[in-house]
Length: 107
Image (cartoon, rainbow, N blue to C red; front, side, top):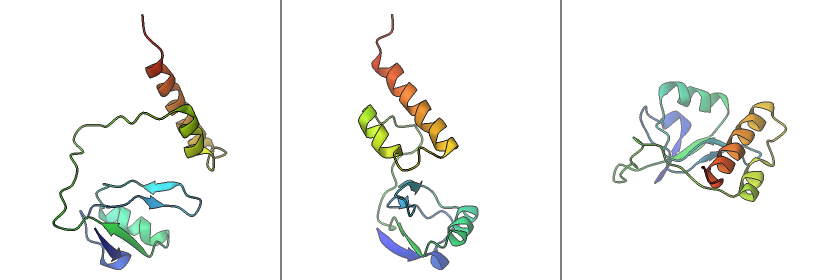
């Protein structure tokens, strides 16, 4: 992992750490492949630097989706600072419903 100034980021670099917003929300997750449009957006957000994977690090296989189980309490904690945002509320409700459907035995 290495710290790279925004002006030095190149197309197809991979984030080594999640990029957090000022309120603690995740703007970009670890493992995101940075493209020109995203690099431009980072500059617009006044992000000074990011951590990217070094050449020796092998990127994780992202070809298949990964399911992460979280409790309702953890979900509430994750969304506590952003739940007033209407879009984030929709995402929260979808995640909560998905968790509930996975924990309820089907007939």
